[in-house]
Amino acid sequence: MTKIVVVDNHGQFTHLERRALRDLGVETELLDNETPPEDVDADGVVLSGGPDMDRIGKSADYLEADMPVLGICLGMQLIAEELGGRVGSGEYGGYADVNVDILDEDDPLTGSLYPETRVWASHADEVKELPDGFELTAKSDVCGVEAMSDTDRDLYGVQWHPEVAHTEEGDEIFENFLEICEQ
Image 1 (tube, rainbow, N blue to C red):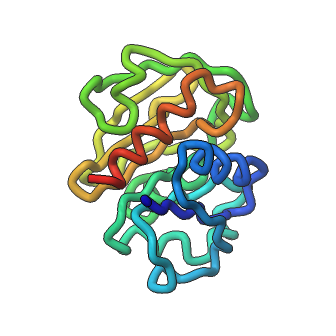
Image 2 (image 1 turned 45 degrees about the vertical axis):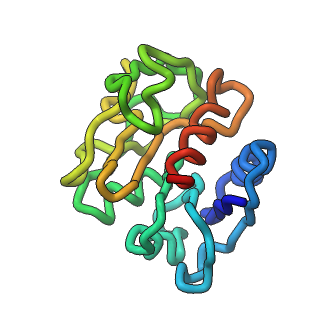
């Protein structure tokens, strides 16, 4: 059975990320973000959202752990920041329903949602500049980088929260990430 761990960055929806994976029949575990990746035996990792980049623990270490990574909200921002991209304040601010344009129908994470989807997202902070090696895979009227992928390194990120009921096709993000982890 495929195992995907969720690294807890103190986000309010982190438990829902674990539940979404469990509901797909995935073996999953919620890990404290001080857990080093060398102590983890898994086929993939989700870096959860959270309130503060100063509280990410050892999350960045998972980017070098040779397993697929899905960053959600703060998780995507830490991927970008750690790998040379840029994160800044969003103009829109708090949580809202957002229509997202999916830009690449062949992207393994978001492509199945092409051409657009409706999501629940916070834009207090957001990726402003992609790190080297990443492709822009989704954008919206309120955020220029709603999703990004580096398929060579199996690193993926979404600004929105696929685990919440307000995101229309959120389960599909987890299903697609599971497929990535099983390859």
